[in-house]
Length: 190
Image (cartoon, rainbow, N blue to C red; front, side, top):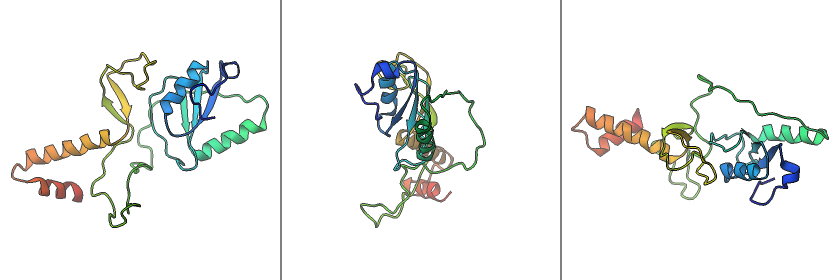
């Protein structure tokens, strides 16, 4: 089920964990489940998303699963008339290997549109970054989410760019005579 607005039957969803497919609108899918009376969501990757898991804030308890994990889940759901499940919280895991890894959505090169571009010159951490956020909006960005927090987990170039800008600032402070090309080269080669 894509869990789009109006797609869930509250009589079937109330009090249940709902399995939703699709990579777009992850937090919004949880809102649809909650509005239909669901108490949790399993968000399943499609084949194209594979094992890429994005840490998002959600409005209801949510487990985001890889494509292969979801295939196992679908097999289980088809094998029984009364499937049972629960979503359990976990503490943060430190030192998990392999890490660091490049995000599935990051450019590795060559560019599919312009093959002459082999790769980006610089990449930076941008997935699951704990960042200060405005308390004017909720962690999910959904109007129906009344929560306000000083920090949230964020992903994207909006997280990677400050890492590189900070490094550039530190290099400029340490080596005030360096110009932009020297700073750029230092970041690329170290």
